[in-house]
Image: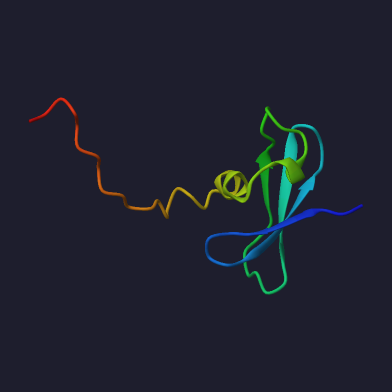
Length: 79
């Protein structure tokens, strides 16, 4: 059986292992110095291969510290 691999925003490689329908394990692979992490599986998808890389990164928790800075859009209600 194969597991889904992906790279986080820092370039570290992870392997997603679906242990049960409610829990997924993120295992570091290659030269990834991080520790393994367990997360709750998303309720809307049972297969890690069906998720995008961004969704996997969000589950892993990478997005919280590295939000892309964008210029706020101008409000159409302000002159």
